[in-house]
Length: 148
Image (cartoon, rainbow, N blue to C red; front, side, top):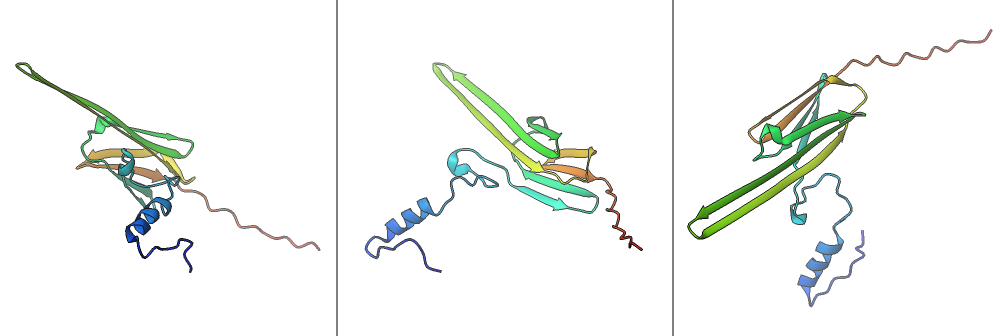
């Protein structure tokens, strides 16, 4: 396959710069870590098991009360918002620091999800969400009736 970009033998660093800028799709924000843009989106592992769907989100440094999990119209939404302030005073010296962290992830769930069987726990920097499945009757076979 031929490349649409021409390469300069005199300025190889320019080639790398052009590839870094034009080879990336800035509008594809589907499932990536955006630390270069100043925010983070936790990575997710999704395992589809016969009786449940397991979702793990890597979110270290948080506590369980930081998370908000909602299920609406077959969409599972996990969000987090955390704000911290630290103030230090000693004599005439004063220092105040604050930080803000947030993310929002949505997952389209299949039709066989049992919304009454959704559990979540947070341990060792990983948020575990287990979504139970309900049995869905298999579609009945179509019976063809011949005309006599």
